[in-house]
Length: 207
Length: 195
Image 1 (cartoon, one colour):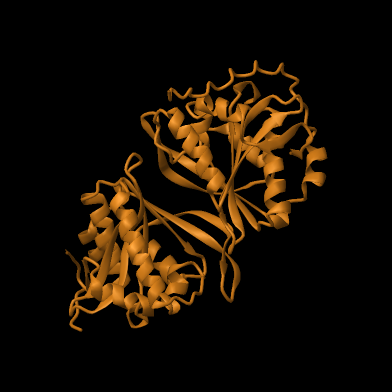
Image 2: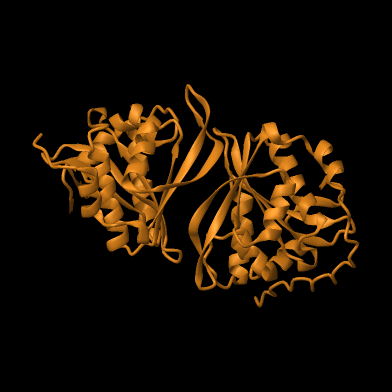
């Protein structure tokens, strides 16, 4: 576990894997991954995504949760390019009660802490659909700089929409310990969700 | 085959694959790979080809890669679409002129005009894009000359051998902005010439 101010980062397993079956079919997922085709994700797709990320040499899928242990969503440290020392910083909010909250911002800050202070990255990339002010605000508060806009880059609900491209350099990252106290992070203090039903194991019918 | 004024785009057969060892170990690779320098054996390149063929057999949609040859049949490089997203009608372009003698003479531009027409008219793409190092002045000039718009400048996006970090400039072209290959040829004054 990596402890932040109002969230903690944890391995993406157990309840997270169960929640992801729902989260991966919701709006926040597709907003976080604008190049993906809008299609239903089956249990098999979800399992394969988690497995692929676990096996990946270029990324990490990380869960983030409130201090009371309530899972909020996922952080993707992705497309790591070690020679150039850059990677992509992506977050998705699974529990939409936390949309736009300081918990999400703290999750992103913790992802940047991991990227710059543990992985030694020089630059982090991000992209945001132009209409998505909430995501853009989180990246900006974390220090990302808008570097340009890809025009009509993504098909979204019967229209072609712009994609903002953002970057943050290690020289611009003050360090988690320095930036977090300046942002006045306030916990939402929401009631934890009911725990998901435990997975039913396939019973072998061998006789 | 796609026929241009100075070059033709052709299937990449053995002739092109044999040239790759020379091109990938040369200055051409540095510019095409965004500042990397490599030491590649014939065996490594052959393994790449095998892996590429295997991936291609299972991948849908496939990227498209053409060989570029001069009008007298000399292979000088390749150009193509490495990443296609049909649901977005979006394609990323990439190219390498492996032979330095053909840099700056309009050969790469001629190939680019062919691939743009091909992507819009045959593959029904709606938007094309590509990124290049800010220090790659030949490509920067070429993109803007042909009509691509600079949309993003990603700071320190590439580590360039011998230069340190360099910005990436990302260019985009929408189908509605493309007047067609003939109109661009006329505007640029590109003409066929004997070798």
